[in-house]
Length: 225
Image (cartoon, rainbow, N blue to C red; front, side, top):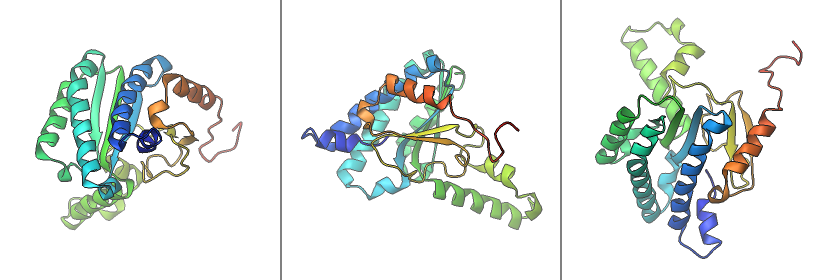
């Protein structure tokens, strides 16, 4: 969900105004997903690299995030949305961690849409954390080295109970993946759009989904086989 800061600064506003508008845009996109046949949605809210930003912006982002999930939790639950979080929570404020766990529990029954929010998430960090945990089990004799295969690693990742993504969309015109689900998205289709996230509408998503439906996915095979 890239482009919040640029959207605000192009209008002469503080960057946090763009982040607040971006949070409002999330609400629209989440509501549109079920009607578009989307049952799994993962949004990248805060990366492990985002700590490099100014203290003011980081604190503002965390405040916006906390306010959003607290305000939206009941509505998401009523609308059948299950909310989960991936990423390293240990660096987050304990009060925020408690709030996140509570919301996961409150929305656990939802089946209309599975919404995953990546916060303090980095793909390389996730893989490193997972491999350290596997190494500890091997060292303790709980796991044979021969048992470490792709399936086991996938199951141990933060997304162990989620399907791999079929489509990854990045807004704002940037054409890089920025450490987002590198293991899981090995065979995902990518869409890079110049639209800044605060301007990205349900109609934009519908157009991208329509184009995605016409793509041929071969997963390394040959067309027609």
